[in-house]
Amino acid sequence: MSDTTTTGRTRRSRRGGSRGGGRLGRKIALTLLVLLLAAGGTAYWMYASIDGNIKAAVDLDKELGDNRPPKAPMSGQNLLVLGSDSRAGANGALDGAAVSGARSDTALVVHIPEGRSSAVAVSIPRDTLVTRPECDRKGGGTAPSAQRVMFNSVYAQYGPACVMKTVEKMSGVRLDHYLEIDFAGFKDLVDAIGGVTVDIEEPIKDSRSGLDLATGPQRLDGTQSLAFVRTRYGVGDGSDLGRIGNQQKFLTALLTEVKKQDLLGSPAKTYEIADSMTKALTTDSELASLTALSDYARSLDGVDPANMETVMLPVAYDKRDPNRVVAYEPNASRLWKAIREDLTIPDEVRKSPATGG
Image 1 (spheres, rainbow, N blue to C red):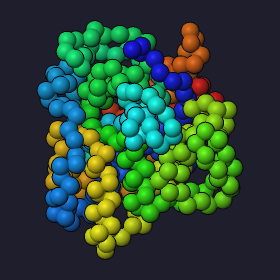
Image 2 (image 1 turned 180 degrees about the vertical axis):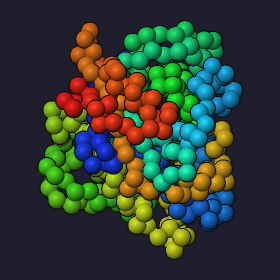
Image 3 (image 1 turned 180 degrees about the horizontal axis):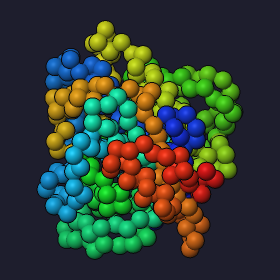
Image 4 (image 1 turned 90 degrees about the vertical axis):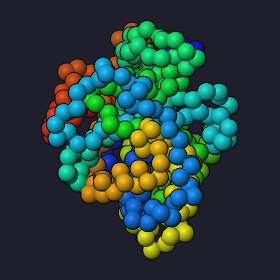
């Protein structure tokens, strides 16, 4: 299998407003799980029967080793949030795809400062060319470090531990936890919530997915929501950039919908939401139980979705392959430095030539 996948572009937005971010619609569903369980954290005893739904993918201490960025004092929490795109089984049925294997179609580094109510989510475009560190092969043995590797191919070839190593290497940010959800789980989550209302600014008609939305507020079910955040051909120029604004818009709408839910007042609905989400959830070993996940979620209860700022890793088109992007320097390094040191991200750092910003 090669180290390349599909083409794509992305950009960021502040507080979910303007265009930006990566495939946030799907990956943010993972962060959403934390917020959902926080909202119903005091009743997590109800979820004992679904504790076995949660799968562990990474033992951070064992699989990432000692060659990692240091944990900065008072640095808060850093989560790697992935949305997997297997396009097989239930996922393949969502859009008629028939592709084997799995990819990290979405990647988001979520930084939650110590003792604050805000958060910053940095998306990494899936077509970014990166240097992959030495990683364990799935069938045994070790793969040497490689340059100019397609970011979203790392997951497919070497698994989530290698993705975490790659992100830590490129950012210098030490990751505390890992969360992953697949597309089928995203669909079920939206249906369990009862749908999400999104304000459609321009008509969308995608013959491939069947998505057909008029302008104005639209209540989307799980299937429509998934098509909305995945569509390329119904918006913009048909590239990954075209769907960026949709994903950012959906992120804000989804988190707003969750805050409106009376989870504690409806135990049955709370259970349904938690059950649908945990069936599709994969975490690091430390969070791989309902009790641990609920405790962690409650520790983040002060985070207000309205204060989550979404930023795209600044990128420029690769000079050798215009279908790929590379980190745009020095902006990318300055962005990661701001995350590591818990600094405000200056507007000039956000400039990303690939998005025209």
